[in-house]
Length: 371
Image (cartoon, rainbow, N blue to C red):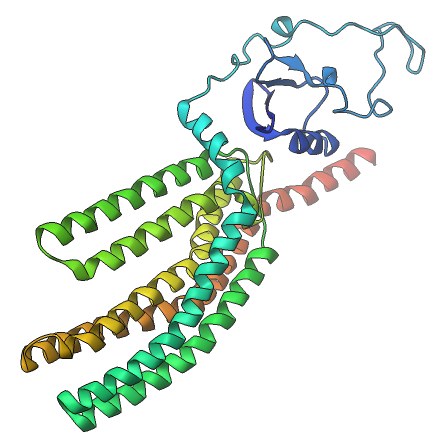
């Protein structure tokens, strides 16, 4: 069953959709007033928020009074004013786009728990894939020692083994650090407009990249690019799933904000979504590099000696770049995360500064008026 989505309007501006829980929280925080208008699917017209049962505490609701009655005197309950006479400029009930229905259908099937499980699976693929790559790298150095240069092959193989062992340990630790930073930083957006748009765009881009890699593999026999096209497709699909679940990024939807705050929220959402991709990119990159490394071990036995050895060495170089760059993603993302939030806090301080400067002036003026 799809969750009920609410829209509300203040100062002739429509906001939403928000869930019933978020609407209740807005009312409790004073950001939604009893006279503000609300609407959900199934209602024929907008209605005052005070008419929604359970939205406001009855004890906290102000008593209706007539203009001539003294404060605190009992009065008769006043019937709600018709919506049209209260705010004739409020927009009509929003029309549902087919993509909205598609996103509503996908969300329950791609909830945060499932998406997080997918991320942990790819992270495990990266960690264990590096262990397999260490074994294959050692095997390749031994094969090349017999087929080509013994000393050079064994030396480069030993260096590669040392690098992969260190990176296998470092990548796992920094993936944990990224999860901790994501949980420690929060954000907010006024609606799901940007997350839903990002989800649809990333899904379409992933399909385009996959089809392009398949066409390249068929037309120009560039089969080595096919694993990377599949990896890019998986990463972009995961970005789409993350965008559909803002709670995974510690983001709340429905809070009102100014243009500057909303801009910071949009950039922060995109940045944190990309950071959530790091374990998936790490896992897919390591799997691609490991497959190429296994293919490189096979090539010296597949054809004529000199040509097959050269192709095997080239494939091994591609595998080494893929493995090293993929394993460096988590520590690099950790440093970028910290630098971004330094700029983030600086921008927020700049936005808050004018109100801080106005406060002492207003206080001094009030004191002078009292004197």
